[in-house]
Amino acid sequence: MSAILDVNEQLHLLSSFLWLEMVWDNPFISWNPEECEGITKMSMAAKNLWLPDIFIVELTNVNKTPKDLTAYVSNEGRIRYKKPMKVDSICNLDIFYFPFDQQNCTLTFSSFLYTVEDMLLGMEKEVWEITDASQNILQTHGEWELLGINKATAKLSR
Image 1: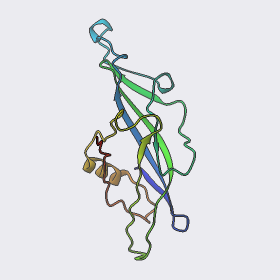
Image 2: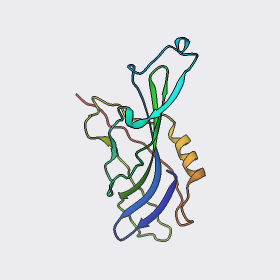
Image 3: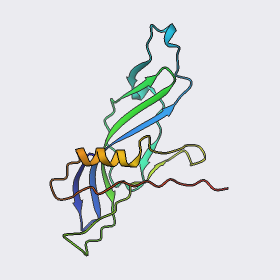
């Protein structure tokens, strides 16, 4: 998370800015660097690739991600794609202890087409690394402080 843009206590909305970074493997896009002048990675227009259909369940606005983004592909077929997102999301706010309140806002990442049987969603970095990075760059206009980031993973049961 890069910025907390606004918190609307009456509507229970959190407006934030974040970078969604996705990494996946596509073995059909791979090459031998020895046959390609030592090239081990390249960039290409993301619109020319299959992209995971990840969305945020609590999102209340239309996703306005720029269309002309770049993805980076390694010779092993690993694809890395980052997209900026302005997220207006539902957040059940408890302001009983205002102005010393703490809020817990959930962002649930999911897929329209795939289930937990088909796709593994996770974090490439440790939670503490993401929290530290977010706390270092977070812009909040002095009103809010990011205390932490937690993760929960859906369990597949049979």
